[in-house]
Amino acid sequence: MSTVSKVAAYTIGEIILLILIAAPTIILQFTAPFQNGFFPNDSAIAYPQRSNTVSMVWAAFFGLGAPLLAVFIVEIYISYREGFPRDLSTNIPVVIIQLYKLLGLVVFSFAAVLLIVQVGKESIGSLRPFFLEACKPTNNVGKDYQPVILCSADNARLIEEARMSFPSGHSSASAWGAAMTAFYLQIRFPKCPIPMLKAFFQVSVTAIAYYICLTRIQDNWHRPIDVIVGSLLGIASAAMIVR
View 1 (spheres, rainbow, N blue to C red):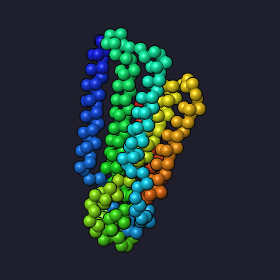
View 2 (cartoon, rainbow, N blue to C red; view 1 turned 90 degrees about the vertical axis):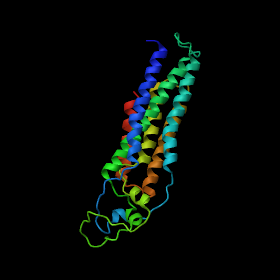
View 3 (cartoon, helix red, strand yellow; view 1 turned 135 degrees about the vertical axis):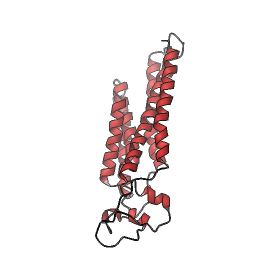
View 4 (cartoon, helix red, strand yellow; view 1 turned 60 degrees about the horizontal axis):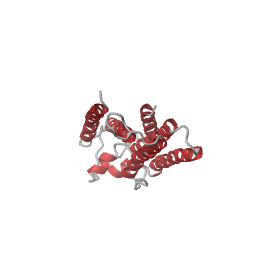
């Protein structure tokens, strides 16, 4: 099979897989999370709501941007050291083919992580630490477990969001990005001419991801277990891709 045929087959397969990942992710945006009950005056969900220190957009930008940038720079540098070789059958620079495959793999893996996280959020329906403030339940009296929560607040979107605490999407995205970047640099670029530079980037992305995870607890959007599990999901997903 020629290189062109291989790339075409890879592209078709990649598109199909992305559709299989994107379709359920989009569908889940229009479904309600599992409806958990609550214990009245539960202190674990009575924290005040705070604005996000790091928005999901920025967490995703870092999570996806860091490995994409690393792959782009490293692959071009490696190709430069090898004299920018070309594929014999197509005369296309090898770096172009390599970048196409790797960048597609990174995007697919990131989309898969987002789907895994969303499935968890929708299936568990874990109440966020600020749930009582977001919901303002009218049956927040007594001590017995209330299987149905009667919210008096009128912000339906916020109430739904307050039911999706586990696992942390910010933590999954940022931990995945940091792990993917660090693993890729270690495996693909083991003989970096400036080892300290590689270590600097690995430590930097890890520190940024760690900070994002901490803000989720600080902002009262998640509990430590939400952040820990979300981070482990991201790291495990990255480890399965980069090998």
